[in-house]
Image 1: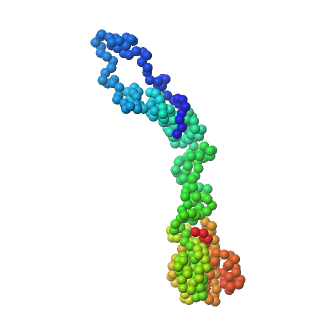
Image 2: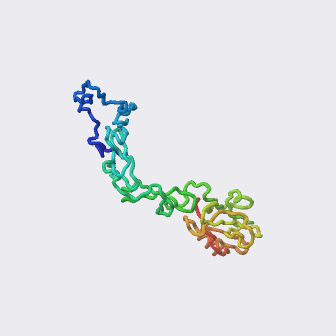
Length: 310
């Protein structure tokens, strides 16, 4: 809150209370303040009695006023604080600026000029941030921004969007947002993918990579479920098909995958070794090419896009 130096605007002729130099009234109308002998009565009546004020107040006409905080009697009776396009206040007997009218702001810090800049800014309303998320209008910096309000980015949430415009999606402590998928291999099951670390190390499974890639938990708009299916030989494979591409119902939903590279997602490649009827999934193009060129695998498709960080 800014304090005004000197008077801003005052009610009354000179802003001062009367000092009684004209003498007190008497029944004779004399100016020396002596009582007359007539019977016209005195000027003071019960209706003219001053109000009873608290210790911090004084009598200003017919009202009690605290000259330290009353903007209608600031510092002295009758001194009204009027500040252009502003909400006036009185602090310690001096006029002060206590906020601006809608559509105006104070840029020079001078209460004498009040809220001198007209701005088109609705504090707290929604706006579009530079990264496309929904932000909140902030009018604080309209002075340094050439009269333009700022659009404050929201905090990061689990939605496959860079909410806070820092160039990264869904980073930080977002419990339950992404789930890690572990990669194992075994002589009987081939490559095996699961979100359960204990399952990834059960039986004859050997853990190759913990949290090899990440999927999203349920409830995020724009993603598709990635299912794990069982072949007649007991080996598993991954697909987005709800009926395991016409073969059976899925064993389970591993997580949720993207059909594009949003939020820094990377392709998940699907390969098949027809001899043992074993599927293999990798996020590495080099590993994909090696499997095709040297290990007897056929590249089938890109299942979708996954994330390499949680």
